[in-house]
Image (cartoon, rainbow, N blue to C red; front, top):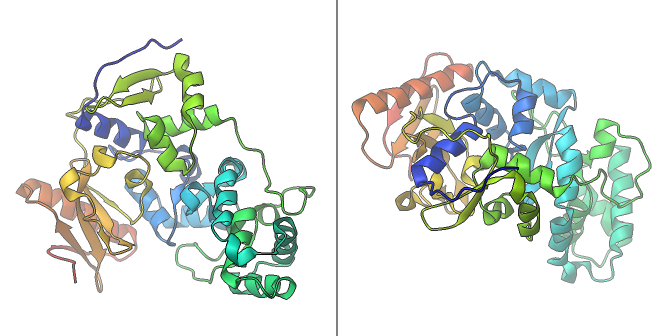
Length: 373
């Protein structure tokens, strides 16, 4: 049984603990599929971010490694946490999607006006049969469903299919160096799971919520109940944390919020150096806590967004310290939010140049300036 603790972890201590779990204090010697599992998936709203997320975290990672896992159907792209697309191992896709299925069902309710008179179970069954014949585009799914429900709103029909079924984006979409439009089939159809799931019913069995709590803390802790709820996009997790309390240690942040953690998880000295890292847009490091000040200084809140667009982030001393953008040719432009010492600038430039080399661009240049406008 873990002993209770109530000491305060300041922002810097939380930062270093989170970076350690996120493999961002030093690059880990870890296969890509193990890293995807450890991180409980990679935010993948766009095609390339999962590759950049792994490059920032793994020693010797090559894009072909993740691309091969996708082509071998060992990792998949699908809607899970927070109703956003993630790259998951197949095992996590099979279990985390059922975990958040209740939230996806509620999402369908937002479109009930456009689904008047539509039998949702019948819709899911029709959509399942259609995409399992062969992967389909969303436009094709809409057209097929409109044949049965011509009076329904086309977009609402498509949203309902996406929410009710565990749809995955099939390759070559998402494979580094290749292109392809979004085509969808069910997770079962793509990875060859045995038949037998009733039409319209999500596949897989949701894991015990306590197991996911432990994994979340291992990747994002120390964390509060609200932090995990923010990451998952679901609510009512207090009971799960309370059941685990005897096995966990607890702290308080500087605002008095209770934080839970695994007893043996890394909590490095707050003075531990954190090297610069180039993160892509929508990295889960920046999206998985209710209180993001452990990685986003309050004065920089919102600086990595432009309207509804998210910018790529430069981490400086472990915190969001700027944004970056790929320019023409072999140039990356870095916009820092505050002045840094010359030595730090050199480290940032070296990391950016290494990223360009990793991308296969050869020698590259990092320019410091504005990327706005």
